[in-house]
Image 1 (cartoon, one colour):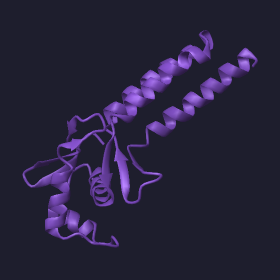
Image 2 (tube, rainbow, N blue to C red):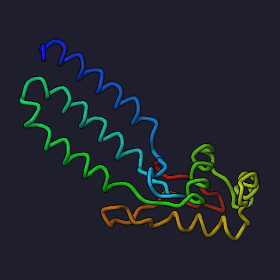
Image 3 (cartoon, helix red, strand yellow):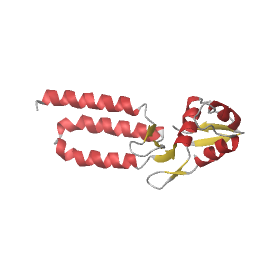
Length: 156
């Protein structure tokens, strides 16, 4: 491959990846019904920076030699995600849309248009289940926090 064409292709791939990763924090599973995966913003930012550096170095080194490093990096990134269900995803997306936070009752009202509306006790149970969620690497992580009865999304 022509080196100038290779450099241009790498730059385009890098720009597309960086653009996509800045908007993806909660993704639907491709093969599991009612399953979503969520990752913290800080992990996405770190991945974006590392991939940008790696893509810049590919033209200088043998691309086949850097492939195992990128695969290892993507594997570690994947282990930073958490598996959640559709109810948790709906609550988390609503909290993310309202940075000031919501009370349990406000969330219940916000989520009433769902096919399966949640009651106040269901909303509270879902919120508590988003605290101490086990990431794929086994580490616990909070995706929501409550202060004075107001719940907020944490780093999502």
